[in-house]
Length: 123
Image (cartoon, rainbow, N blue to C red; front, side):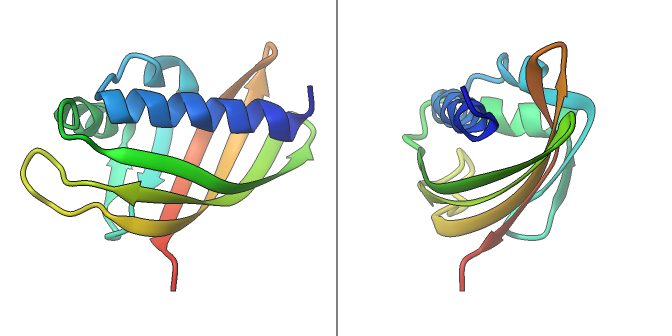
């Protein structure tokens, strides 16, 4: 299985968990010092992101990966791509967007984990 195939599968799992509002898979999918910059420019650490994911339970959020390219560099992979989000947070904030992203993943013991993820609305 190629690195790109492995990371596509990881994002599929990520989106399934986010749409379900299930933070548990993220304990293994992101590093403890993970950092996320969202489409609004807010910066999240792992704990804050897990709280955000919990708040998405029952909101009907829809996420779909539409493009992904992985560039392996030893135990690291630079990932770029695009996904579509439709829905609101439990507080009513609209998350709908066509999103471009850049992410850095690390492979340790045969397991890919995200180190950083930066998202921006597609122009």
